[in-house]
Length: 443
Ligand code: HEM
Image 1: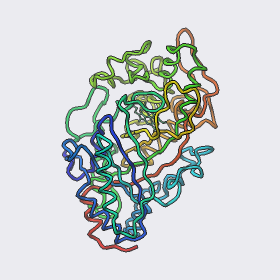
Image 2 (image 1 turned 180 degrees about the vertical axis):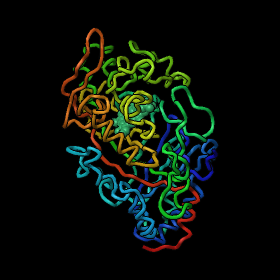
Image 3 (image 1 turned 90 degrees about the vertical axis):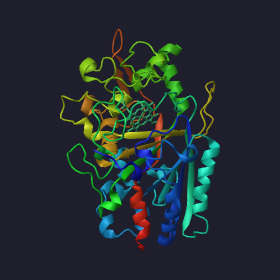
Image 4 (image 1 turned 120 degrees about the horizontal axis):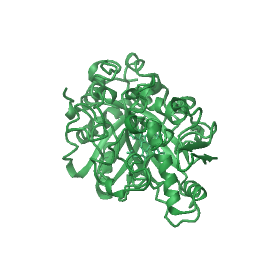
């Protein structure tokens, strides 16, 4: 099976450089002809999965659309109607399913999230700040003299040189291996995932071709990116750790028990009792684990910790849930400056993580994981207990994990995070982009 790498936008299959500098640049469309010109100007700069590894200037551009954006481009109603309901509704309208309530309610989201103002998005990534600025200029030039297009937001993101996210965890080890992506799976990636789980136009885990709306040219090699902007309350997280354990060592242990990895990135599964940063840099070891054989009852990696919830690997083999239908390709990056290690109080600056979840079926993949595994505990016989890092806290706020000599229970888990935005977006194949501009539609 061959994937059409030259036609698939690169972010789907290719890992971002580490560290990197990125921006999400969002536009609104008031005029379909102007939007076509914008896309036409951008197409030569869109990086495919084939050019990703030898990029011009160590920088990359990809392009996404919201449902409202496609409507404003004049895509015929007959095609628009066939999009999945979650994409048509937009993420804010899915708040009940996603658990975006209380302080995560779309009413508090940062604009332009939570309304229909965001139509086209550029995802810009680069190996340095200067190269990123150079690529951003391409976006600025593309909207020059296009009165129907407005730049509405730019959010700078990145992975710092220590590769840590704001809570101090090293990130970016585990991702599915997609059949046809090239190369060999690494230990821990398991059986290659069917490409149709992540890219339209290929067979998925149900044995069907993952299809989209309208003619094949519109959806082949495209996919959906479900974007989440999550605010992180770093001071609350640090305070929580110090309340749980007096010693630095004890705090690291609690941090590991709620994530399933030590903050260095070392998996509990491979080093349950002490951190082993030596294995983190080795891709043959840093993700080389599964749960069924050695840890089905979760004595080593707690069933309720973050990484085991969001990817139970083979740990649900004996249950009715088929975990292969709920895989996510995840690209996370931090926004906002790091809170200094020695800070004694919050500096009032907003910081958090933007995660792009790539999936061919957002309801069955991102939304399922968020609603059933992050925000519910039934699938692991944990009742209504939620994810200790990012789960909603209005139903249950405790977390239990096996420990020596006795099981530990944390009561009153604070709300470390709040959703600050999100959207389901469509990332077309490159031929689809060309086809869209060739149609001359008007809404
Ligand atoms: C503040 C929010 C979040 C933070 C700080 C965070 C952090 C992390 C970290 C440090 C890892 C381990 C790195 C790795 O295994 O590659 C991880 C893994 C992962 N996270 Fe999150 N995450 C957050 C939210 C979410 C959400 C909302 C979801 C899904 C709904 C999610 C899905 C995943 C998945 C699928 C993995 C890979 C697990 C594996 O394959 O073992 N994360 N996350």
